Image (cartoon, rainbow, N blue to C red):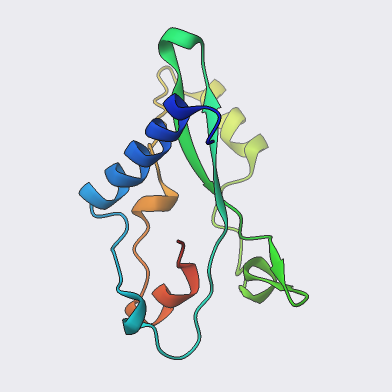
Length: 121
């Protein structure tokens, strides 16, 4: 990122947008008590020179001392519908609606006691 200052500025702006929208909260380092997990993150830059877009990617599969955040999470049951049944329903009805919810993961609110496990620097 140091060699590409434009992309670095885009990355900083993306992080600031997360703070401004209330998707992340700033925590003072002295407030950290108990168990804390830090997620590594990096930028993914897509698009042409005139229309570049920066997306921050967090890596829950990165391991520390043999464990990753993904290893420690309970996957629970699948909440998504079966793809075949979705496609068959599209054929049955005259009209269909679809949506792409932007930044879904970032808008998922965590319980207060779980937030220390998704920290990042």
